Image (cartoon, rainbow, N blue to C red):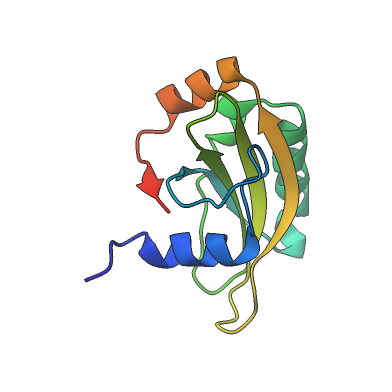
Length: 128
């Protein structure tokens, strides 16, 4: 039986050909869901604020996004860490449509200090 997050790992691996930090396969790396919100026209201001928080590396604010509605598109911020000192945050479009593909909207590199911070605020990590 596949780990509950195995499908997410497969989907992320499908849109992330290699680790943006080290250039190697993401095999052996870990990921965590940092934030998630509904991506609808009615929620546009919240999505824009999430994007701003990511661009400004305000990881504690990103962590406060925890909205999901199964019948609506979402955007999800994932942190990916490897055996290197830096990490990466990617903002992924997560469509409601079953056969619509996920895509990366935004990507930001985390410094070693930021990696330590997200390790503290993200309790659940999953392997690729």
